[in-house]
Structure formats: C-alpha cells, structure tokens
Length: 389
Image (cartoon, rainbow, N blue to C red; front, side, top):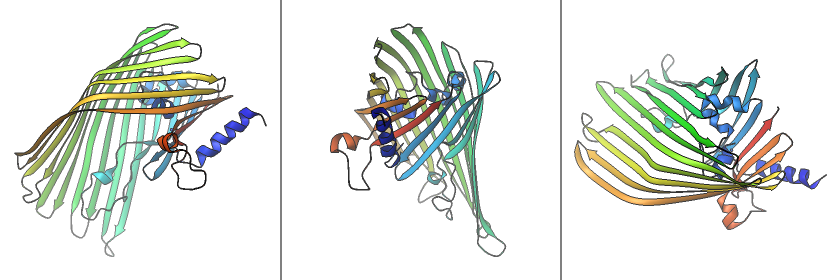
C-alpha cells in the first residue's frame, strides 16, 4: 500500500471514530469566509451558482453539543438543467425553544432537519423548496388526546453569472399543540425573509476582488389559550451587513483571502406576558453593531494531494440591551468589546474524492487522547466530496 493511500485510510478512520462536523469545513477553516471565496456551499446562499457544481456530491458531518448529525447532497444534470437534492439539511428552527404549552415536553416535535431541492434552469437561474414536518399524538382518555404538529417550508431562488450572485429565501415555520381535555391550545408560527448579493468587482490571474451584502429578518409568535385567558409571545431578529474582500494568488501554491465588513448589525427582540399580570407585557431587546469585522485566511498546497488552511476573524462591536417590565425601563446597558477566533484545517484530494476538515482546538492545545474513548477527537468539522465529471 502506498504512503498516500495509507494516509488517506488513516485520516478517514480517525475522522469516522471521533467527533465530526463539515465543503462547510473549508469555509470554517478559512475564518468562516463564506462569500469571500467561491465554494460549493454557495448554492445555499446563491442558488444560481449550482451550475458551477454540476455532478458533485457532498457529505457533511457535524457535532452540535452532544448531538451528531450529517447531511448529504448531490447536484445532477438534467438535460441542460441541474437538479440538486439535499437530505437532512439544518433549518435553524428548534420549536423546543419556542413552545410554551404546559403539556409540551422537550423533543416532542422536531423540524430542525429538512429535505431540500434546487432546480437550476436557463444557465443562470435556480429555484428551490425545502420541507420538514413532525407530529405526535398522546392519548389522555379513551377518546381525547394531546395532539402536536409542526411543519417548516422554505422557498429559495436566485441568479448567478460570472460577475453577480443574487439569492433570496422565504421560510415559514408553524406548529400547534392542543390538549382536548383541558382545551388548552397553542399556535406557533412565523416568517423569515432574506436577500443576499455578491458582485465580483475584478477578476485577474493574480487578484480577485468582490463586494457583498446580506439582509435577513425573522419574526415568530405564539398564542396560548387557557380557558378565558390568552397569552401572547413574540420575538424577532434582524441582520444587515456589507463587506469587501480580495483573493490574492501569491503563486501557484499559495492563496491569501482577505475580507472586511465595515458595518454589520445584528439585533434581537422579544415580548412576553408579565409574570404577575398577564394583561401586561415585558419586552427585551439587544443589539450588536460591528465596526468593523476583519477576516484573513491562507490556503497553501503542501503537496499535490494535501492542502493546508488557516483562517482568523476579529471584530469590534458596540453592544446594547434594554429590558422593560410593564413598559417601565428596568435595565439599560451598553458596552464595547472585541472577539477573536482562529481555525486550522486541511484538504485531501484523492482522485475524484476530496476530504476537508477543521482541527479541533483541544487537539492543538492539549494534544490527542490515544487511549480514552471520550476525548474530543481530531476534527470539529469534516466534509467529504466526490466529483463525478
């Protein structure tokens, strides 16, 4: 067995028996630089870019807390068009955090994973649909039940050319819980919308520059009816950013990626019934204004089959929060801070297979755990791709 094949087998075995999370892995290893580099994960932000990744399959492996999960996707040619099918993709909607029905238990409903389709047509356009659903019925008496249902629907679309990428989404999560004995009912629902854009200002053999912007809004609400009492909960979040970036090809083996967000705004707000007087409301809001956020990453070809990656992100932000009880100012706080994060990763190419990974921090600072079975493992993210062109 050649050294190359042996190393590939070792990496696969080590990754498969340790904590794995995924090319999502390449983006994370480059300082979470989505948008500043072309990558097959672009199809979820800019659906029209699917034409750049025809005949491509990917497996993404993730660890989230104590829960391991993975997704698989494939882009298939259909005459002059493209069909993308992706299984077990995250929805970012966990109803366990929102439902307040007194009979609801954590885990009764799960719409955190979806099946998603993308259809590319006209060489530059794409439209998509995603869905997740769950239901549960628990008998309370011989004729009456506790019924629970949840559904998530997502509509996406976009256009991509060599210079411009534009994507948009609309998602609608809904859920309902009803106790047929006590007549307590809860209805949960909301909507999320967003628009993402990227423009390549210049593309040359040595230097590529781009500008991008994102706008996203989400609103969710609950209404619980307990006899003659109705309780209402609501929350929403907002994201806006714009950035500029550059990819500088130092030489045939080394590439430098730089990104700058001069402004990024993230805010969250919620309204809940007052603890002592349900006819009154409590409100809470918080916001982050990043001025600015920097990203820098380096990708180097260590061998014909091995790529090394390192990426970092640092931001400076203003933080503010407001907590009001019965409409009265209870707490108003503000602060200025900074955060920094860095990642180290790798990429392996073996014929048509690619393996991208992000090394776990504990491995770098504490070393590997050779004997114990509960160590943090080798990688925090892993992606496996296959190009069947």
